[in-house]
Length: 342
Image: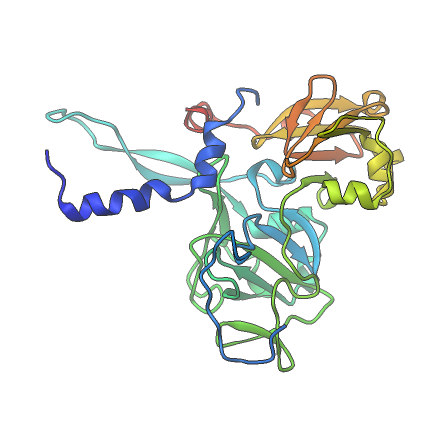
């Protein structure tokens, strides 16, 4: 059957959408991933000119980064809200029977997420929900609306992919981005004022994340009982003036706890660590194992380190002041795993 010319012309557009997520899915492991003018200046966002600044969907509280909104980096205390939706059924021409079925889709409450990050929701002034395509555009959510029924988020691939908002009517100004580029929450500090699609402190337009600057990019995030406490990047290893225990021309090996101490982490309270690889909790280390746990940082690989004797590809690490029980770990359905690994 010939496709209309318009359909053929559009195919490359759809094939390219979510390229990073597509690569991520293909590589899944099998284990249980200030300008002064108020005139808006729109620039095309490209990797070469540095305008694609929200590749990592960072979360900030009063300008402090507390995490990145990825499925594998959700605090384990944040449990899914299961929503019934109608899904399509694969069928052949002439097949009889239902063409749709009821499927359960996982969603998450913004309020649950921020509680897990240690935020007192009663004190929240505003949340600014940035979209993924326009640098300065954001929806302003009053703090009292954070806990509204139906204000949720999900991930494009259920257990991987880009974070997407689910907005009830009247949540903010009646708008909802098609994806989440960044989240900025204001509790103790005053939020900037939005005007004409941009944010301002007095008459100065804010570029980047208010009170922080350039959004988070790259690195391996380390979380401790919820919030992020460190990021493993080669420039931070240099700044910490930490001597590697071994090195080659292209890689350096460090002790994990030694690095965390340089970042102000109270390592005496850590009882367990989990390795997050391709959005999955794949390997656990108890307190005794952590004392000598090492990682390898390879030149040119800012988003991954190799941890332990197995050199496990690691995209995030979660630290815990008490061991997790099996019930506290994320539960994935067979269908979700099949779609993610397929």
